[in-house]
Length: 289
Image 1 (cartoon, rainbow, N blue to C red):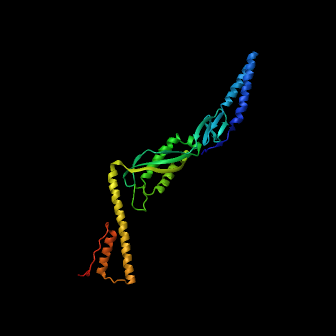
Image 2 (tube, rainbow, N blue to C red):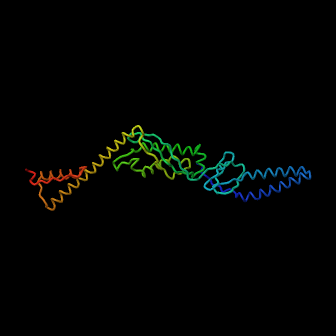
Image 3 (cartoon, rainbow, N blue to C red):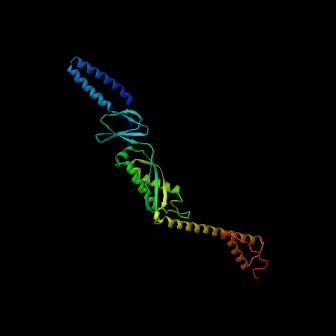
């Protein structure tokens, strides 16, 4: 497979000065030929002048972080990346390719997540061209190719994860932004490698439920958060009760039968799991009265 071939080209200043000097001499000779009615001198200087102008047409400018792809009658000749005034064969066609870092934000696309919920998602992609031959000749329009393939990768990413989850072991678009961004970057890079493009960064810039289900999903999200919080509270409360009973038994502070133990567990769970502050009740008798 053909790859980029870098050319240095000749220094433009080194060619410009002698070409301009030669052009001045040709003009002077042409004027002398006209004055002396020397037809052959006029014809010779005119031909030399045309040749000199043709050679001057080989001068071109390469800006910093830019490449010029050179072709000779359709055949790839090389890429000039040395900045400044350069000179190459005037018959070469020269196509400018920017090597600077560029970025774009995709449009807000609607897609279903892993659970089938419609969401709106968009991403920012930072990229640059690193292989001018592939960018010019492997794809028709590399800039449009970057945009289309980035949105395709974003759609595929959205279907691989759920919008949100309360289980830390399961990845979600909203809860694991760093991991999702790395996945998105890798997927876009795999698609753009054949276009000579390097993806420097890719991150989600917009993420929301689709408007038609936003209200319902908000209620579901709130309910899920409440359930998850309650589960954490209950797990913690059970652990604290277990620890309290174990410490009381080990230190022999008080001896509890099964009924007293059940009462104590019930009271501790009410205190630990209740949403409001508990009000103490003083019992001056026993639980058996």
